[in-house]
Amino acid sequence: MRPSPRRALQALDRFNAAHPWDHNAHYHRWMLRQLPRRFGSALDVGSGTGDLARLLATRADHVLGIDSDPAITSRARALTPEPARISFTVMDARTDLPAGPFEVITCVAALHHLPFTETLHAFRSRLAPGGTLVVVGLYRPATFTDHALGAIAAPLNAAAGWFKNRSRRAPRPASTTARTRPADMPFTEITREARTALPGTHLRRRLFWRYTLTWRRP
Image (cartoon, rainbow, N blue to C red; front, side):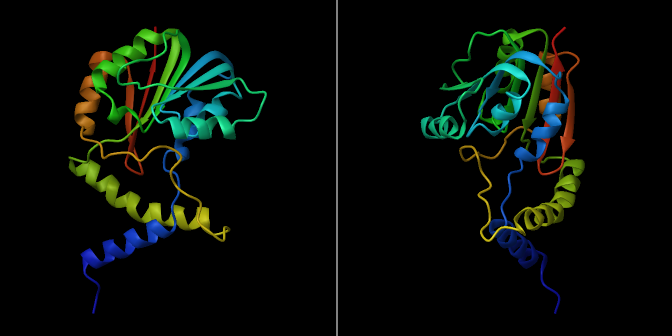
């Protein structure tokens, strides 16, 4: 007897839980490719334990990582060797952001926790002329294309989890940030709002239930 689709999905969920991996870190190297080889100051919003901030510091004069979770921020400091051109600060981006200006602003898996349009305007005001904004975000699947990408991503997610954990006796924890809530904006709405707030922005759906946004301030 062939397994039902529901049982197959449950089995896939159990496999994924046993072989976790970091979907956000998967895009870190791609983010670096969108940035200049060298730049002055960078702001990483929702910095978690600092993985991306430490990568940015290989190119930046200084990186400021902000996160609303004091425990995760403390962990980021502990994981960052000295001397380092990085500082981490507890700050709630829903109500406040550093004044800037910054030559680079990054935000990974945090924008859906924030007021979307207002936050994009805040990023714009803190980005230096010629600076670059790079976002990896989550969206709510709503269209056929969204669901088709999700269907493609499901087996690839399992394969990536197996590949990344195959040489470890125990699976590596997947999350390096606070637990995220599901996104509530569909990609079409994200695209419309972003192009209004940041004319000329480039957005693209990605695998593993993510989208990317890049914008360079004139």
